Length: 104
Image (spheres, one colour):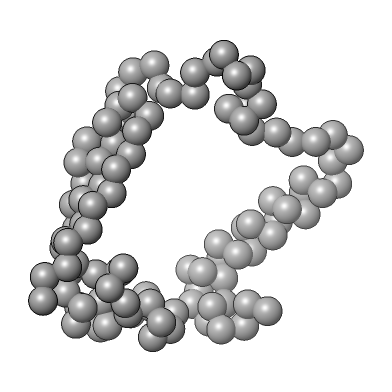
């Protein structure tokens, strides 16, 4: 099932680690729940203060640079949703925004 993507050694290592976690958790008899998802409706899921990743993160690359990337899995990744000027903002109150501009 993963033959094509497992050709990348880093991806294969990640898949192996995920499968090991899955196998370890399947031997447990109790259910595993996400603490935020299991929290009462009155509880706030937003962080109580700044986190290490709060701020504005930017990346910019052309369609040609994307096409030349050694980490692409297939040509379908070369599309208008994957290149241009991107800004990801974490605001410290649990909100995230993403903006992308494509310059032709």
